[in-house]
Image (cartoon, rainbow, N blue to C red):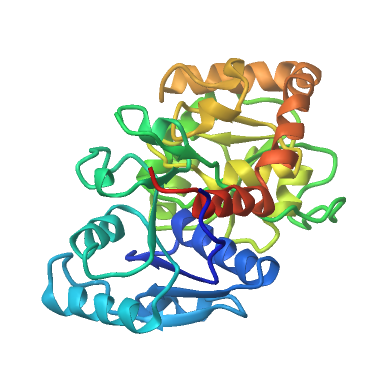
Length: 342
C-alpha cells in the first residue's frame, strides 16, 4: 500500500563548499516548499544559511565535526526527534553515514541521494530502502536498486543579449569552469593551440587559483589573439546562448550542472568522458580520453561542421526540456518519497 504523502520534509547535507550538490538541495527544497505545500527544512552548517531559499526553514548544525563525533550525532538526533519530520533526505556520503548510525533513533522515512562516485560502496546504502542517484554511472558498481533522477535546474530566459565581452563577428567557443586542475583547462589550451582556428575565440568563464598558471600558459602558446579569460560572470546563460558550443575538458566530475545549463540554453557540449555526460550527450562528441589530441579532434570536428553538431543535439535539447528541469527532478523525487518501503 502506498504511504500517505509527507507533510514535513528535511534535507541534510554536510558539505564544506558550494557546488552541484548544494545547488541541487537548495533548488529541490525551494520547489517542494512552493509547489507541494509542505513544510520544508534544511539542516546544514551555518555557512549555508544565506543561500537558503525563501519559504524553507534553515536549521544550523556544525556538520564540520567528524561523522562519529558525539555532539554531531546527539545534535542531529535531537533536532529530528523534536521536529518529527515525515521525510529526512540525506545528500552525499557523510550524511548517509550519519543517518545510518542514527536510524533507530530518528523517526520518519529516510531517503538518500548519491551525487557522485566518491563513496561507491553499498555498505551504508543497504540501510535505506529509498535510494536516489543523480546518474547511472554513480551506481554502476552497486548491487542495490536505485532510482536514477538526473540533476535539473531552472529553465533560462530565451534570447538573452550577447555579453558585452563577446567580440563582434567572431565564432564563440565556451568553457565554463572553476580554474582548478581537475577541470583540465591546461589540456584545453594546448588542444586549442594545435588548431589555431580562424575567426574563433575560446572564452574561459570562471575564476580560481589556476588562473595565475593558465594565463602564462596561454601566452607561451601564443594564444593572446584567440583566448579570452573572462573571469567570474553573472551572465552564464547569455554566454551559453552566444556560443556555438561549450567544451568540458575535465579530468574528473560528478554530474556537472554546467552541462545541464548548457543543454537548457540549446548550447551543444563536447566533453571528456566524465560524470554523467555519456548518459546525456551524443557519443560522437565524447573524447576518447583526457588528452590534447583527443580534445583537439573534438574541437576540429565541431568547428568544421557546425550543422552536423546542431543536428546531433536537436533530440538532446528536447530531452533536456523534458527531463533536466527542477520540476522534472522534483516530481520524480516526490514519487520516491511516496513509494512504499520494500
